[in-house]
Amino acid sequence: MTAPAVLAAGDRAAPLRVVGPVSAVETESGWWITARVPITADDPHTAAHFPGAPVFPGVFLIEGVGQAVAGGTGLPTRTTAVERARFTAPVVPGDVVRFDVVVTTTGSGWAVRADVVREADGTPVAQVRLRLEAEVA
Amino acid sequence: MLDHARIRALLPHRHPMVLLDRVESIEPGVRLIATKAVTVTEPCYRDLPDTAPASAYAYPVSLLLESFGQAAAVLWLHGGRRPDGLLPMLAALRDCVLEHPVYPGDVLRHEVLLEHGGEGVSTASGTTRVGDRRVAVMGSFLAVVRPRTDLPIPTTREDPRP
Amino acid sequence: MTTSRQHLDDLREIVAEVFELEPDEVSDTADFVAEYDADSLRAIEILARVEKRYQVEIPQAELASMTNLLAVHAVLGRYAGW
Image (cartoon, rainbow over all chains, first blue to last red):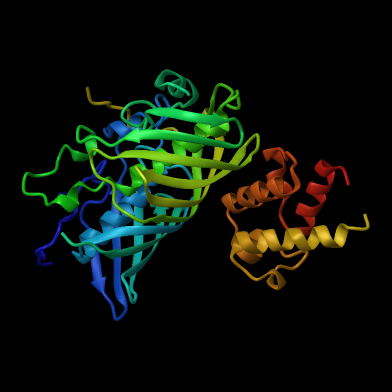
């Protein structure tokens, strides 16, 4: 994939790099993006949420969806709405989660629907719907 | 007003995941106003390269939402709703509109309404402002309390950085 | 129990909202898991809305029995004292 001359995923403020390499397919209506993410114990936020009972914060799954979109599309976007986010099972260090993200181009930006599942047993851990708009870098 | 020590007593979160500075006012079980200053010393700005444009400094939406959620949790749990061993967790969000980005130097002012505060589940809504400007409208935050003992055991050990 | 029908229709509206359906798509006895692909969070969302609407406290232990609209109605009735 070529690197477009826009904000890369690593070039904006983020509590942590949730999503590393992604695989992205451009479709007629947008993109289809997947990413496989190991949840590690070395992130200080997770250790502090909560001491002695680390749970990967649900909001970081939303963060991960945004990073997957940035990495997969190369578009400079800003999240303008979280229409829905549902956290259906706790994610803990040692889990590997998979993000399946569908990005649809709309009139004024992009609509994002993401399913996040725990890879080991396929348990759904989150469903996220976002609205994104273009950001002027 | 609740100072930061009181916030720590109510929330099980710890640094760097405590995203509230002060509770300005609270009407127990009804509404709360809480503040959080965004500063460039926060870990989310640590790895930004010198070449990053101004827009790269927008405060991450995930942290803004978490901060509001913690304000909602304080409103819910204030008055002794959290027995030992129970952890408040965000379970669902609906219709949260991020109207304007937030930058270092801004002070977030969350105005939270407790829509429902039950024993095990709560819903809250509200707005976040920076000065006079509304930056976010939060449609609904659903939170639950979960027993510590219910959580899956991590398969990798904690390795907190210094 | 004269208002039972009204309560049931209020609950149908709540359930429909949570599942993002139209109220007439929610039948009295359709199993939430089998018919609407419910997960445990949906039941919690229903519980929160029911508690708020009726100003009652329903213990989380009841979630397991709230498997269809009539069952939600029955649980609510027990705690609302109908």
